[in-house]
Each structure stands twice: as C-alpha cells, then as structure tokens.
Image (tube, rainbow, N blue to C red):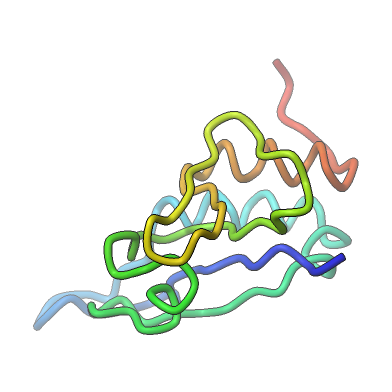
Length: 115
C-alpha cells in the first residue's frame, strides 16, 4: 500500500512585502505530528511554496484544489467522512486539518484529542 501524501506549505513564508508567516492550518498538523512522530514516518510529506500556482499540489489535486494542508489518500481504502475527490485527477483527499488529524490518528492508532 502506498503512503498517504501530505501536502504542506513551507513555514516562514512572505506574502508580498510582509511576513514572515506560517499557515495556521498546517500548524495544527505539525502539532499533531509532534505528538505522533511515528505517524510522520508513515507519510510522504511534500512541502510547497505559498505563492500560487502551486505545481506540486496541482499535480495531485488539480488547479481547483491548491489549498494546504491536504492529505492525498490511497484509493484502495474506503474514503472517510469529509473526504473529497478531485475532478481533475480523480484523487481522493482531505483538506480540513482536524479531519486530517482524526483520519491519521485512527488509521495509524496515534494519540487523539480528548473528546
């Protein structure tokens, strides 16, 4: 089975003449992975630049889905609630940071937030 692909913005980016910034949604994922370092090893993580177009994201999810973070799923698994499908590439993905953490925690039996 192929590893899920996690597409994340590079931290500490500028937006025009202002910055540096980080992506708050990517920060949620980074925090989750800090608590679950073994899960990080189960992912193929690809860093992308803030500026659009974002060719690496387009390659996986099409021009219409350039947001980050995004977790590209192996289509051999059942799609979890909240997953989307790219019209351009046919790939299944999750682009909500909380849903990404929930999916990864459940799939790889990691530490989860208290309900």
